[in-house]
Amino acid sequence: MQLRTLWHAVAIGSAFAAAPVAAQTIYPINRAEILEGSRFDFKVEFPNAPTSADVAVTINGKPAAEIFGKATIFMQNEEGQKHSALWLRGATLPAGNYTVEATQGTNKATVKWEVFATTQPRRAKNVILFIGDGMSVANRTAARILSKGWDEGRYNGELAMDDMSNMALISTSGTDSIVTDSANAAHAYTTGHKSCVNALGVYCAKNALTLDHPKVETIAEVIKRRGKMAIGVVTNSEIEDATPASMVAHTRRRSDFNDIVKMFHDVQPDVIMGGGSPNFLSKTTPGSKRTDELDFIAKFKEAGYTLATTKTEMNAAVAAGSKKLLGLYNTGNIDGAFDLRLTKKGTVSKFPDQPDVVEQTKAALDMLKGNEDGFFLMVESARIDKYSHSLDWERSVFDTIMLDNAVKVAKDFAGDRNDTLIIVVPDHAHPISIIGTYDDDRPGQLLRDKLGVYADSVPPNYGPLDADGYPTKVDTSRRLAVVYGSYPDTCDTGRPDMTGERVPAVKGPDGKTNIANEKDCTGPLAARRTGNLPFDANSGVHSADDVILTAMGPGAEKFRGHKPNTYVFRVMAEALALGGK
Image 1: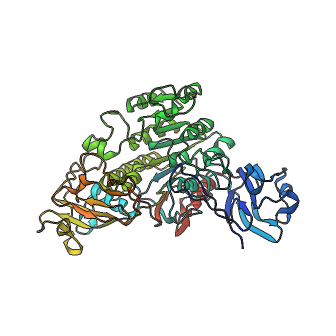
Image 2: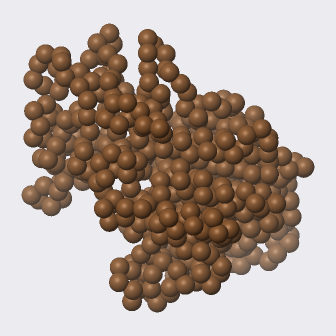
Image 3: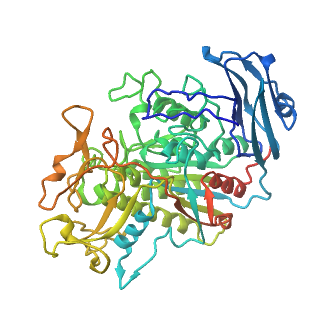
């Protein structure tokens, strides 16, 4: 029986511990689907550090080196560890089916790969991939209620992401856990390979250094190497965060922000927008988070990029005809729509001229659309997920509406041209549900007294919509009752927090166990809830639920039924005809 080494990091940046193996481990793993001509690292790990004479590796019955046309490298006691490894960096294969066998004594491990070709001619000139980080079904439903309204059982309009020709259920699990994180989930979309928690652009092997694990090429790298398409990466998180980083990064640890900035510079997407400026600054610059003297602001400028730190500067760069843009609009994450539009909390006072995801998408499209060879644009609404971690559903749903408005911008761009594939998909889900409505006029003094279910879940009365479909008042007498299925000890007021993002739990007196944040426990209806997560958790966590993908444009017809998340990469690669030598 084949066993694989699976790695699990308890938290970002934590130490890694390898599970014992009884047989060889082969990368890429079993059932890998590999784009013809794309580059990947081939590695076989052998336990107990055998010599090269004691092992054999074949592909379709022939020596691996013969199939690859390149010599492999054998390392006994790799990195001083108690295993040996056979390597080939930067391998490629023509289309076909492959069986890889690794023999060590009486043990034999076998994996099967499909290397797939892409049809010609190219079907899509452009691909726009929207990722709603953590966007669950309840996010879409609540966004539709808040932005379109509801009357006698029907919605008064559809979301832009609803009104698309094709739909599929996407499963999101990684290689080591049924519940994924954003790193290996986004990595599946941008590489077509499965991986493990915290990993980007690599398989999780036994290498000691985070940058040395077996690499797989990202779609941005394939595009840059093969042609002249333009590439854009847009987010309202730090640009080094997991989802945007998945376009360029190769690291076992998603928190390697300094290295990820360098990887952005190596690949050089034409448009880069987000927060996270401190990791671009030399360590001698005040506010820097780098540990070296490299000044990546200067490096990007030397490479022909215009730097924008505000919405005004971004729009000026577009108007001036800039072809390359580095937009860094916040030292951390860009504020979400709820705070940008309603409360002016978060960091809005410090960064009053931040663009939202819609404005960034408009600017990116204006810059990329002039490329004669087309473009690939990834747009993330990151804080849908971050606000769900803090159990702050109103902010999460406002950012879902923001994502939908960005999708509308893309659909308006695509128009009737039929050359642009648009995909809207979460990277993973949260356990979030709408269970009714809270009505202040219901009798009783407890929050549960105000909860109406079934026939008593009367429609909410959120304030009038602004021109962009956001309610102008959310702290009203009738509100959606939205609950999470994973949470620490916390309190729930049933109302939005107008003072800033929720902090559901804080450290207790022992400094280890998290307890409910008493700030949320003082309102007249505040309900204290005993958590269902481990005591060291201070926020909600992801779920393994399938997520909904919607798509339109050339290639979208391939999305139907249920698919693994790696299938998204395959459809995009086929639409762009990226396969080949």
